[in-house]
Structure formats: C-alpha cells, structure tokens
Length: 334
Length: 266
Image (cartoon, rainbow over all chains, first blue to last red; front, side, top):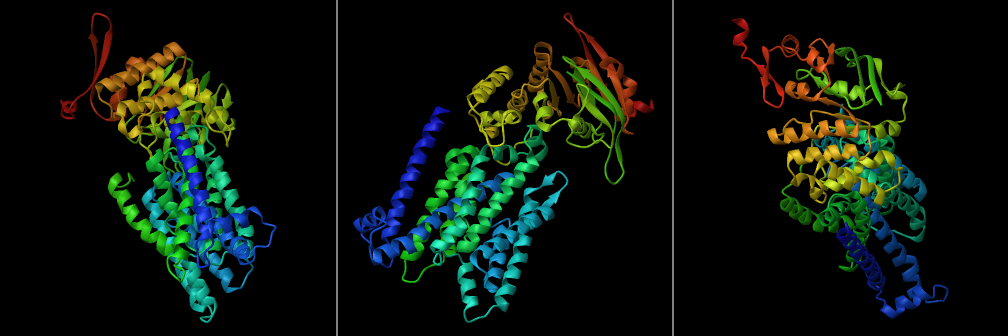
C-alpha cells in the first residue's frame, strides 16, 4: 500500500513538473520564437504592454496550450471511463462512435454557421445519441457483450461518418468545405480565448465528475448484477459517467475536431504502470493525457511550416505504440 | 435475521414458466442448499430472491419486509452475494476486489478509507488468504479466487450469505476448503447461507434445509434428509440414484451415487 502511494506521488509530481516545463517550452516555440525571459516577463506582468510577445502569448499560444492540456486530459479520462463502464478494454470515444456522432453534430453546426456554443450543444446531443444507439444495438439480455458493443460502435460510427460526408457534399466548396475538412482531421489552430471560455467548463465538469466517481468505476467494470449486489446504484452512476464522458468528447470534438487515439492509448499506458485500479488509472490518465496532447500539438505546429493535423500525428505515434502494447500483453482478454 | 419466500413464481416474458409457487424459510445459523438439474432455474431462483429479477408472483421477505421495498443499500448491507467465479475484463488485485464489497457502506463520491481497508484485512484473514492481498486475481488459483469472492461478500458484515455454485470448477481439496469455510461461518459467526450446488452430498453434509427444483418448476422444500432421497433425486435429475451411508468410526457419511441408465431397466 505504502509503496504504491509513494510510486503514485512520484509520478504525480513528475507529471505536474512535465506539464509546467513543457507548457513554458510550448509558449517559446513556434513561428514567432520567444526567449525564456520574454515568456516569463510577459506571464509575470500580464498588465504591462509587451507588444507582439503579449499578443502571441495571451491571445494565441496560452489558450491553445490550455485547450490542448484540457482536451488531452479529458479525452484520456473519457476513454478510461468508457472502458470501465462497458468493461471493455477497446472502448474509447472513437471506437464507440461518440466522436463521429459529435463531429456530425459539429459539422452540421458549421454548415449552418451557428455560434460556437450552439455548435458544442449540437455536438453533445449527437455524441450522446451515438452512445445511446451503440448501447441499444449492442445490448442484449444480461448486458452488452464486448464484441457486440465494438461491432455496433463500428456500425453507428460509419453511419455518422456517412452523414458527415453528406454534409461535406452539400457544403460550399469555396470556404465551408475546406474548413470542415481541416477541422475533421483535428486541429487546435482555430482555438481562441472564446473557444477556451465556452469549452473549458464542459471539459472541467466532465473530468471532475469522473474523477470523483473513480473508485465506483471498478465496481461498474464488473458484470451488472455483480455490481448491483455490492450495493452500487449501477444505473444511476453508469448514466452519470457516460454523460460526463460524452460531454467531454463532444466539447473536445467541437473545439479541436476529431482527435483519435488519445482515449484508447493513454488509459492503457496508465494501466501498464499502475494496474487496473481506476482510483489510480483516472488521475494518471488526466496527467498523461494532458502531457500527450500538449506534446503532439506543439509538434504539429512546429515541425513544418504548415500545420500538420493533430490526428495524423496521434495515429502515427499511436498505431505502432498500440501494436507494441498488444504484443507485450498478449492481446486483451475479451 | 429471517429470510422467507412466499409462493414465488417466475416466468420469462415469452411465457415460459421457470419457477412455480416456491416457498422457503431460513433463519440465523441455518444453511439452505438449492439443488436441481441444469436449466431447472437454480440461478434464476437466486436472482429472484436477491431482487435482481422480479418475481412474476409472490415475494421474498427479509425480516418480514418485502425485498423490493427495501432500499438497495440497506438490503445489500445485510446480504452478501458470491456470484459464480468469473474474472472481469480488467484484472484487479485481491485487495482491490475485496474492498469493493464495502460499496454499500460508502457514498457515491467517497473512496474506501483506513476503516474499510482494516475490514478487508480482517476478512482476508478470516478466509485464510491474507498473503494474497496484493496478488492479481488472474495470478491466483480458482480456489483462491473463490475465497477472495467470499471475503468480498463478508466485508459488508452480512447476516445472510448467498452463494452461486461456490464449489464448481474446484478440485477436491478446494471444494473441501470452501465448504468448511461456509460451515464455519454459519456455526461460529451466526450467518445464514443459501447456496446452489450440483453435489447432493454437500447438501446432505452441510445443510439443515434443502430445496430441490423439479423439472416442472415446482420445488420440494424441507429438512435436507427429507428432501434428498433416492426417489426425489431420480425425479428431479432423471437418472437412477442410490444413497448409501458409510459408517466411519467418528461419524456417518452419506454417499450419493448415480447409476448407468441401463440399470433402470433391469
């Protein structure tokens, strides 16, 4: 017990330090390079006039860094939550069709030129509709079997991506279509302070709720009747967790487009280090997810002159890593 | 503690009746074994008794109060359930698995504290697997996992223990350990226990009471010796049965034998 606690503390401090250092680094890097002292000057005296540096830090890089931290933490937490609730190691915002559903909602909003809060709401509604459908299709008496759930996730996901294609087909090829296409590949380039203000509350609420319910996730990952017999109000807590995870996904999707892999990869890394106990997996996912997306996004905007969509990078890093994980663990016990 | 079922019946939605007018009573220190052929409805009966399925007629009562009228947390503090041992998709350590049994005592947002962990230690000690606390559930034997699940049911401080085929898939020695533990818990700790089993011998040896499910969904309930007889078993399982008593110096043991089908015709 104590050994585990020490290990957890060491990792927590390490992750927090990594987030701080990497954030400062990310503030310095980019097309308009800033020195360490410039960044520090600007951050420590936000009232003073710093000219170009102030604009870059406060209006462009800081919101973007905060969103990447929050979205990374959120997507990883949502992944850990979905995996526990559906007792399925392969469940994630992307595999369950939530992300595709939410992106349809958001694309629809973009098509009609809605304001960003309305886009987020529409993303949330369709994201939830997607989980609901997946659950209905994959559910049978005695619960949803992992294989059925993943299969129905594929079906629902492809249904929504067809609808997304329909929207793209009917969108104006001059301006709306490129916006949609680029956004769908996942990008934080359009993030502004306003996106931060509208999206962050959803992300924070969802993360906090799952964090508070983290021990109950262990019980939820057992067969439903077994969890009920432990005295856990299964239906109520499962609904709360699914809502929170879908809310996170929808908020993340509506702010930065489809970002794959984070929700699948990060919780598994957390499990490799800490074991399956969600009391540790959830906090670890929050920390690692934040670091992961921050690094990816900074790389996305610094590696080449033109921005690389985030999803491409997460997949390039994610796919080999996941193959390695599968080989090492000998596949998951499904 | 007093547990009762009065005229409980259960049918599936498409009409097939599985359980017919079942009644039983059980109090402290008593063990009730439920016997029946595969598919006769043993597990269904258990789930109905626990309020996990709804009776289509009749009801179960805990201390005179209908099970469905109790708040779930209230019910599950008094009743510990040991399901058929099956590893979950995510592998927890024995300690993490057992502490989940404290859920009924904790609020939605709370985490298990030192008091809960002390209870876990105590119950692991009780069933004799303290040394396995930090082992993964997938790395211990089936018998040890079964004991962990029993410990999980015990950390809630139940008055009634309900076990679904606790000794299935176990070897002789582990069956013995599980049966002895249940008998000891009821004798020394004053618990009552209900268990499904495939072994009539275990029922005769352990149980004060027995319930034998018949192919038509009705049941025979009574003292173990009255219920478990050659003719009733033959009727319930559809196979020729002989019951013999073996006299050993310290005690008499009952042995239940099935005979080849060909023996029936002679």
